[in-house]
Amino acid sequence: MKIILSWCFFLWFFLSESYSAVIPVGANYTYKVLNEAFMIATPGDSIICHDLIIQGGMSVSNLSGTADKWIYIMAASGKTVTIQGGSNSIQFSDCAYLQLEGFTIQGQTGNGMNIDDAGTFNSPTHHIKIKECVFQNINATGNNDLLKLSGLDNFEIVSCIFKNGAVGGSGIDMVGCHSGVIAENYFENMGSNSIQAKGGTSDIQILRNRFENGGARALNLGGSTGLSFFRPQNATSEAENIQVIANVIKGSEASVAFVGCRNVMVSNNTILFPKKWVIRILQETVDVSRFLPCGNNLFYNNIVVVNNDVNTEVNIGPDTAPATFNFTKNLWYKITNIGWQGPNLPGNVSGQIIKDPKFEVGSDVVLSADSPAISAGQSYTFPAKDIFGNIFSNPPSLGAYEAKPFVSSTDDKNFYANIYPNPFDEFLNFEFSDDGIRNISIIHIDGKMVKNVISCEQDSTIDARDLKPGMYLISIIQNSRQMIKKIIKHK
Image (tube, rainbow, N blue to C red):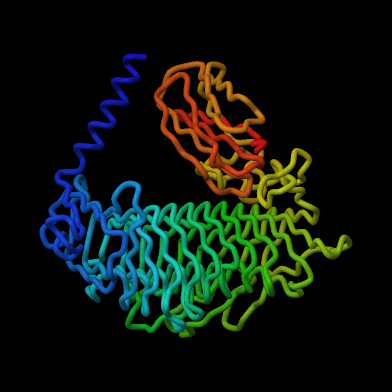
């Protein structure tokens, strides 16, 4: 136990030392506004914002940390700090190694936030992380985005909320962006798209997000870009090498649009009740001397549930290569037609299942024990994770939820947790069979993580009085070992 506590202290000390200096910002502090802090920040510094409302319309150029000393821009602990209004909240240009965390961005008349390379295509902005921010209620109706990214490489957008976007805009719009991860975010009530990737965007992972009425095209994988804005300038497709794994997509006119994109993989997603099409295959930038047709894309291990709103499952436009698509081991179900024979798909089609996926009562993602989707998928060559962060088995279940999570070959007989009481009312107690640093997550059955704690103790208690009654999943991760259990809250 002493060794474990010492290790926990070392981790705390190491993380504390990673912040070289703290720069407080607010009306009652030395630095009144963020722009003052931007001018003096150096690698390793943390800029902490204390005012509850910050006026938008700021810009910053060439603010950069280093690979081992990032600059952190954060809302003060326990405060909801809102960046309100302005043509955008902040425009970051030619920046690097920055983390933005804990802000609410709302009411902008242009884009909610801009991150770009200032038009210097040979020197992209890079290594940016946006964590636990809320982008919402944009005060614009045209082609304006909650988060606009242009010429950004090596980035992460995690655990953010995007709500109420502009009618003609996107939640996240990427133009010529590369090597990014968009994971565990929530999108609701978008305009044109939730996520758009175009202008030569490549090597993007879209993982474990949830989309509720995510726009005309929840995922617009490609698009239409003016030739001068492509990064790189010689790109032959709007987007390529994109992975879309373990998302839940509910509503939207079309769930997934492949638009002038190549080598895109859409797998293990749960797609529910699109309003017109499940998939669109389009080519909006047409120049056969330069651009390859939309094709060579994969759609596999997905669960798709539709009703009478969908008459044409796949909408195919001109100048595309639908015959090069592969549809493998997907489950399709039409709740309004028990005798439905399945979708009309182009390309190579194999292993389709036309059955009720059988979700748990009260859930639109968790599979019941008798679901035909369990262990019915095509295996991965890498450790892909489901919407709860559990590694898909070999073979995997279909859809965003893995009913039988992978367990490592480690001797797991000593990895045991007694979780009680179950059902519970207020507090959850954990008794572990061994010492260790472990991540404990409580996840609502609809897929939303509601609590997450790091524990170094053999015995732990979590206050869960604020949780609503219902079914939850407990996910425990320790080193390479994973455990998941169901619990119920009474009241």
